[in-house]
Image (tube, rainbow over all chains, first blue to last red):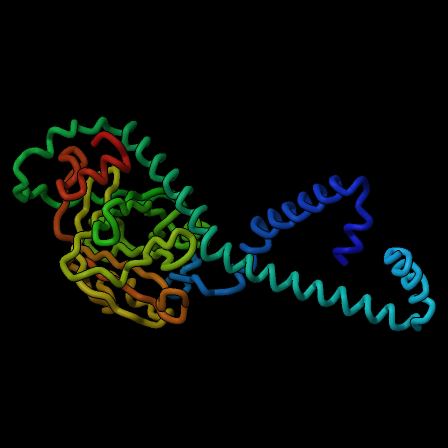
Length: 56
Length: 267
């Protein structure tokens, strides 16, 4: 899959390596911004409140 | 030579394989790569939760303290640092002034706990929703009393991750001072005891902790956090009692004067 993507990137090798790094960085940003906070909400490993504290 | 040989074999191989096997191999390879990706994402998640959230929250909480310091500076010019040189006799400043609660996510003040660290300064923010606790610091249970009021001033904080504001809550020793600074002054609480309870024990937030229906005569501080340190099966509770109070005009208590100066500047 990743090999297929790499082969289908346009440009010479150095450009394809650069594009891959940009794609990986983009995926990381998406994970930190959206995926991880969402996963953190699903798990309750870090809840430190008492009772139904999500009320204002 | 070797290259030619390899190229010839590569050209021959697809013809010899049945077409179904190519699809199977491709599928297995994609599934394998996806599984490896999922594993890496989970490891990254653990790293994010245990390390990156602390970096983010520490920066955000410093910013909140700076904003609060600016508000303090605008509200009343603090007296010069020369004043705390006065004899450190306990002076009775009368009943503590009780501030009004700010709106959700508004800053109430700063908490200093020298037992945790000499530069332990964490903002206390209104509300105990995820957005407050995950970035802003200690969350004040909005339905409990404000600092200094007769009753229970209750706050929650993360034991691990998101700044780990109450990581060392188990190291408090009876008699330890816990200082709360608001725009009105300094409230000095004395730690009494820890208790480990189940998360459903809302009675620890009662005006007299764990005694529903009893009318309070004293000012309590109750802090709640996760227990055990990397889990959330239980809650660890720290109870403290209000010992004394100083108006903002009297300057910070001598014991934490340096920390206050470092946190809010000037006075």
